[in-house]
Length: 116
Length: 110
Image (cartoon, rainbow over all chains, first blue to last red; front, top):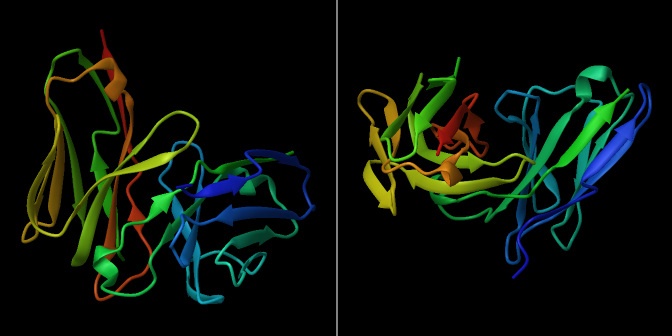
């Protein structure tokens, strides 16, 4: 049973470019959350997708957008990259229904984005 | 403001020592998670707590809801326990996201 898979593992971009990161959830999961983790800090919530809709969003600018596909996989898009967008981007999957408090999020290994 | 604070930021121990990491949060939560992150980034969920105490192998997690505080203990620490340990919570009433502490970097020397 594959866990959460993310691609690519590493990425180098320059300022102003656009990037797309991909995530496949753990088998049977229907919800995908994206987090940004800057060096030496805890992850920060970007947004969560459930039933192909953005269900909750953190304090990130509109340059950060996403999508969820019918097979529950998800993409994170970042436009007009800034140096400060350099970070580890983590995807987590879970069940979207039932008691929220009991839903464990399973994390992928992350995509490390460097913006030069 | 919903906040999660961890202490200490860094911790070095000798193999075999007992380790404690603390987490406090500002407002009511529905669940608290302890996570482990190794170099390279991957995060593994260790515990999910809403009350009381849980034990898995040499790891013990406790939570005091009234005091808004949780601790993660590592007994008989081993160099392979070296990692970043992160506390994360779901705030009331039904927050879908996890809010994370900054993490505690644990180094266990042989």
